[in-house]
Image: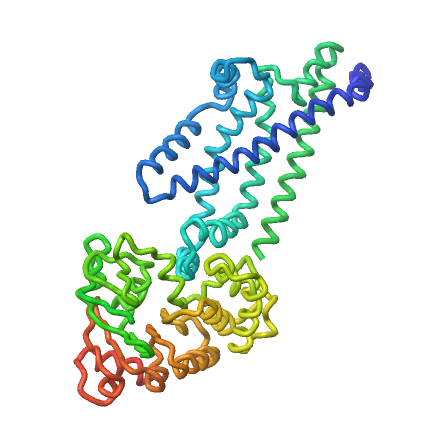
Length: 219
Length: 242
């Protein structure tokens, strides 16, 4: 039965698939950067002794962690154009959704990372005369991020997979591009097999890299 | 220089410091000792405001530590502190450890900070270790770097929180030697330690704490030669006779 498969379709569509992969990668990278920046701010807010601020940040995290990602993507797809007052295109609305959603997860990772730095390290910085901000910047955060690298990368791999959910709003990422070709050429099995293979190889490589890093840091 | 008046502190319902009052004058070396859990580390951390206290007044050079209006970072930058576990910053090199606060807190230029760091490393006998990372040094070496890091700020006083407790026995002396030298140069020092030999050699006064209270506060000679309270007696016999 395998003789009936036509792999030529896959080879012919490589340029189009690569275009889709570029969207997937761009979305992943921008969402990671945005998520970490916003997540760091949220983590710092959660850790302030000033209760109202930590409450707001905590509520934000709890809210987004209680929402299915696909719902958030849908929601922002319809909401963002209304807020901005004009169509912004699918890519930007899903990017905003991903940044806001991922920030909640990054916040918790970063908070745990900050708390993994021993209290006396912060004392040592304070004793030298650093302000709270300087102490975070020069003493605590560099160490926290170093402790967090493996789990941040793991989260990045999950995010890379999750970007395929943009399918629901039709942003032409890797999966959607493959889907379009598959339907046009009526070669669904070949295309989706290739898509699965690509995700598998990329994610497995990523996980193996993380494991290697962990071993290196564990030494 | 350092003055404590009726300082009390609670962790929830538990009182860790109970009405502590004492004074450290300029150029004086005061050793604080006592059984573990007696509040000595907490007391010394209150002096530069690392630990808040609920009652009493602490002033350093006339500035009130507990006052909300006090610029604590600025005050702390004038008081050196050395910790039990060294607390060098593990992600930067030894010389960077000594430079960091000079650059960011005192606003010194890179050249000046580097020169200061090098001369301090020379002073603590570690000039050849400048570019290593803290984890590559022995405990004794790390603690000497930590003393150098505190001295780089040109402090008016130095606080030591059990500086030799985490060290292997053969490394204790190299750290104590640096501290003795510092004391002889006239540095104002408040030292939490069980090293009675150190107290014997350079301390002017000894404070004995128990259960959050200052039980003895006397000159070195009085403490070692004359009648002490029963608790101090018991404590001394425990740490001296083994």
